[in-house]
Length: 208
Image 1 (cartoon, rainbow, N blue to C red):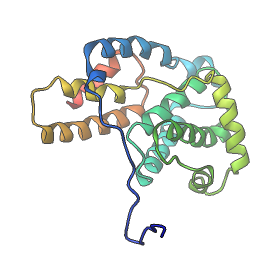
Image 2: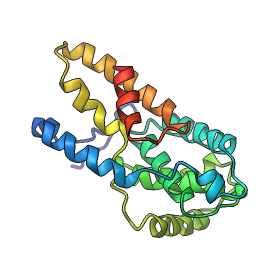
Image 3: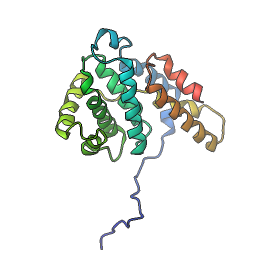
Image 4: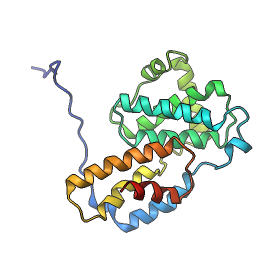
């Protein structure tokens, strides 16, 4: 007899145990070096973009954060999506009418990278009040992948949180609270223009 979920049950998502070897100093140094390869240009509003200005990016970033929170996405999804968006805008002039489409596409890709059950194209189109179609999103996905050279393994400030917390001699319950604070701070920083390598330390260490 097949096991069916009752209406009040939630399917359990299986996860691997955290490997403490991934929190050693060698891995941290490797991540710091790799981070440089995924930093967007700091001047793309002046040198690349003709229509898009910082306030437009902030509006789209806030919308993306709200979608991720409402869908209860993994904490890594939003910072990674913003990294994709900024890297794309660093190399490709984009019309302001396509900025929300770009944001939805970046969330689509980031959720595929980080979620066990990723966001669907249909669901993301609904969040745009159906101002974009699934076909447009899928076409934009290929364009973003091409411009990012299919390199989606970005290192973001969020990836450093566990490393910093592992160095602190504090109780596990306290670590969980600090982790939440750090995740919130990183998400807020991602809505602004913070791209230098030292931001990783500033965002994470300030929160901790």
